[in-house]
Image 1: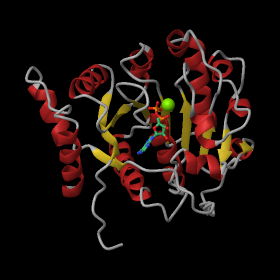
Image 2 (image 1 turned 90 degrees about the vertical axis):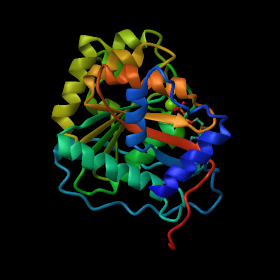
Image 3 (image 1 turned 30 degrees about the horizontal axis):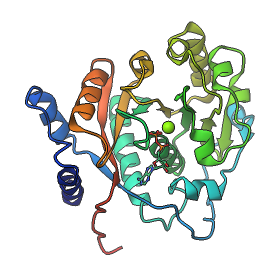
Image 4 (image 1 turned 60 degrees about the horizontal axis):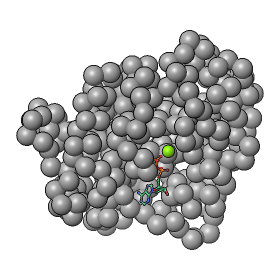
Length: 294
Ligand SMILES: Nc1ncnc2c1ncn2[C@@H]1O[C@H](COP(=O)(O)OP(=O)(O)O)[C@@H](O)[C@H]1O
Ligand SMILES: [Mg+2]
């Protein structure tokens, strides 16, 4: 944890004090510090040979999971898009595994399932973190994870994973496509609903009765332990505000040398009015923690 804090401090000072808390919100500033943001190092696309995917052996699938179309990620897309949690040798993987384990502990302690992943502004790494977390969770054989691309205006999970011809999230949320038509299965315990068509009335769709019904159907059919919603940036539109009350908790992804303290603070405040804020991930951190001899 000390090294993470060191990395944070370096990132903070490099960003010309952008992360400094404002005086007007001392309480939230304190909360943010005690929550100890998890740092994810800045990574470059890897050019190593394709990793061999060791699929975890999970509990019996059950016919609802078995009937989902099987899918395998495109290794080149994963490498290019910094999805590292299927590659045992990648140096960035332990950061995501630590994040996963912290997350799982909090979820289990509180009996929570659904997590919104958002950021103050675009390109902080929400989709990258969501995908890495999803695959990291897939290694937990006793845990069923569902990942949904809910950035309806600028969907990118399909592209990040190299998924061809993804389904339409709009059709799923408006009740025109079923769970089986929308979700694909990786291994035995990760289901993914990607999308590549943007939706203009995203916020209204997220708040609609048909969306609520579609998500209930998903819960009943897949009985997930963890549901990750990859959402749009919080400050750009009202989508996150609209959907936040529907989730148990939220994770804020910030980017080192990009996210300002004020942006992180507003985002945290707005989210905390609507759901529980799990914590802050400091992504794209150029100061990697020291290795501990492994
Ligand atoms: N830790 C990281 N280090 C370097 N680049 C990253 C990191 N995380 C994400 N990126 C890159 O930043 C860009 C935006 O990431 P993305 O996950 O699509 O952001 P968002 O979903 O928040 O808009 C992508 O090109 C992605 O590969
Ligand atoms: Mg995204």
